[in-house]
Image 1 (tube, rainbow, N blue to C red):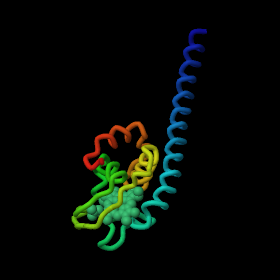
Image 2 (image 1 turned 90 degrees about the horizontal axis):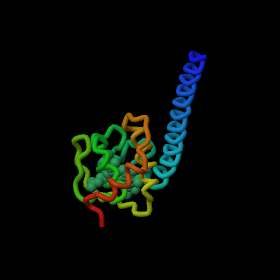
Image 3 (image 1 turned 180 degrees about the vertical axis):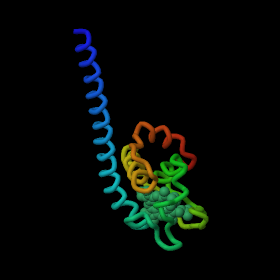
Length: 141
Ligand code: HEC
């Protein structure tokens, strides 16, 4: 009797952890799907569909060393960037427009897409992580 109840507990925990992973995976797919749409509408003009950038005008996002600092990326998406910026040893110097219309959730979805597509990640950058970062951005008006 004790053996069976112990076993069913193990089975329950096992099933529970599977459905948790499923929830995470569904959330990740949802963030990425939204992120792709936002990217196509607001970013691809300059950075191009495959994130390869455009000549010396717009830096690449795919393979960019700039991705190592995720907080900088999150702030830059919302507040843009003025002045010179070095990506993979190459200097770019055109304004990146601010996107104040993007909600915290949209910034999170976009960041999740960028990092899953070009940053080697397979996880969500949750809006709960993004909001406090956005509140601390240096270039915030
Ligand atoms: C009008 C063109 C334009 C648009 C639209 C634009 N960017 Fe940029 N982006 C730039 C430029 C130019 C820079 C370099 C900034 C500088 O030189 O000061 C840059 C820099 C960046 C960087 C840091 C450098 C790198 O390549 O890794 C990231 C990340 C980035 N943009 C992401 C985005 C995302 C995400 C969007 C959509 C919300 C977006 N950009 C929309 C022009 C643009």
